[in-house]
Length: 325
Length: 196
View 1: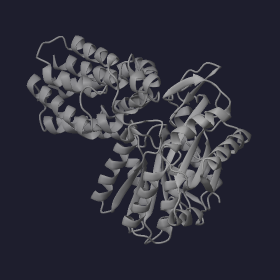
View 2 (view 1 turned 90 degrees about the horizontal axis):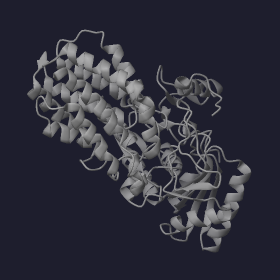
View 3 (view 1 turned 90 degrees about the vertical axis):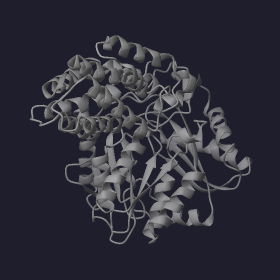
């Protein structure tokens, strides 16, 4: 597989360097670590918000650093959770003296490394709490569900709550509210290729697709003959509608990294048509690349039932490059 | 008897074996995970290699340094799991400069408990615990360690994963051996060779 990279082992560090150099007004880098923080440092008195995970999900997570969203993003190796010492640096960079909330996606590695970092930070006298996002309905057992694109809504809403001066407990409560209501599901027609090994995440025949993929290049829960996007949308919405009642929702059609915008809008067209026919009111709509999986060709659909509080925080200003309103 | 030099030798041997089985580990992980286990373990043990030239006063000091190195270099789930295992093994070794079979066995049980606690996992879930726990519980001095370890690794092939990323594949996780079980057997085999 061809890749536009230098030394594969330097991919993440060179990406971080590039981001900071291109947007010095927004980003800073913690010395010697792949952690992106705000250019102007932690905001005194504000609850800090830290997320991160493996790289390969751009614009997640560093693209969500900015006013109204994250204070630091910890960038692990591609698809590999960052280590506790790295997360600790992120926590320190985000700590404005009023505690730090970690937004963690539900993968055993991420949860372990972020929990270890929280223990280390507490040893350093920083108040830390965390929320785990597990929005992927492809996995039936709720405890095992992966954190996928719905995590972006947690960043946005918790970030706005923190920016408005809420306490750590309050920011955690709203983050939990989003995490417990948001639901996503994804699919792919082409895999992505790991930069170090050059191998595809899975081998797929020309006429097949994977339903229920995660965001780490792994296979889906079901392999099917490829069908047109209208039918694929029916399939994914079928799962999502079982868990999200008709009403006011935010909807996100998220590209997996290798999907043309034209296809994302075609997908959105069918999503909107079907949801409206089923009695959903699409109060806020997002179409684009929010949580990707390298160059994977596919998409995910996320639904978040809205109330006034969540809507207000979704609409609050954000300077994050990955979430321009 | 495991000496400090023997322990270092075991770690060097582990690094060589991980390197030579890197693609196998990665391919197994591609089948039922996210395809980075070989890459992550190789990066971690490469870093371990670089701390082996230093002098250590005790098995505990060496094991702790290995644990911290793995925790900060491997990443993923394997980093904290192997890292905390070595840190707990360090506690069991303490200041000892050498360990007999009984002490090694006790240390491996401590390591197992640490992996189970950190990973919130039990035997039978198709993870590295399926090598560590039965081996640490049942091994006797002078056994054919490698054949026991191989058998434990092979047993994971028929298991259905209920923990870790392989659990997303449910029934489809059957038929592939667990990559964490294989890397565990590489490490334990190298260690037991030095214990004798």
